[in-house]
Amino acid sequence: MRISSSIVLYRESSATLERVLASFASIEGEKELIVLDNSPTPALQTLCLRYGAAYLHEPRNIGFGAGHNRAFGARTQPSDVHLLINPDTRFEGAAVLEFARWLHRQNDIALATPALINPDGTPQHFIRPIPTPFSLIKRRLFGHQKSKMEEYEEIAAIPFAHGSFLGLRSEIFARLGGFDERFFLYMEDVDLFIRAKALGQTVIYPHCTITHEHRRGSSKSLKLLLIHLRSAFKFFWKYRTSEPMLQ
Image 1 (tube, rainbow, N blue to C red):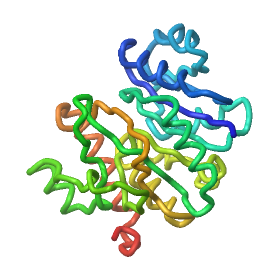
Image 2: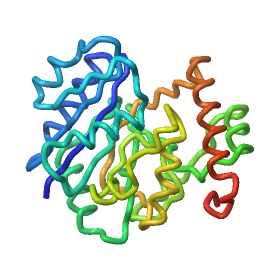
Image 3: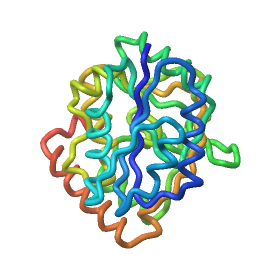
């Protein structure tokens, strides 16, 4: 089994990036990591190469989904499982390897997420229903509602999970055409979940745990909030005649 993985960066700190590079390096076996950096300068290239990761620089910032798509297309060899990894994560290589091996055997599963925890070890509330206009407004006004992640002790189907660390069999990601590049940032992971459901189940695999910082950029930055709102409009327009898919 061969694992490929992609990480998309934008003005990332070297300390944060080094943690996830070291995590990926701890995975044993055949693997390949492609880092797509949307930053103005290729300042992180040397660090990536030090950890054996391929480095692609795109100074015009093509976006999160497009970055992952380009990285997937830059693989030097076909892979069996592809991991979509946020730079603000860290993990144990052995656990991720077991997750990938399990996913490789699951012909009925299209998309899977491990469990996410906060840096302090508490469960992260990252499993959610497919958003609606009302639910997004409610979350903006009242914050995130508590999820039932801590109740998942076994593999189970889920509607949607925040796309901080996702796994797909590579042929599934290819069949989906990767992310919909109309979404520059935000909502591209929801869209991927919806489209993946046509090819199999979307599930949580709670036997692997990923530490994620969860920065919540759009709640702190007006620019990111506007990008989020634009992506939400595109998302709801795309699925305006597909209400059953949003249940």
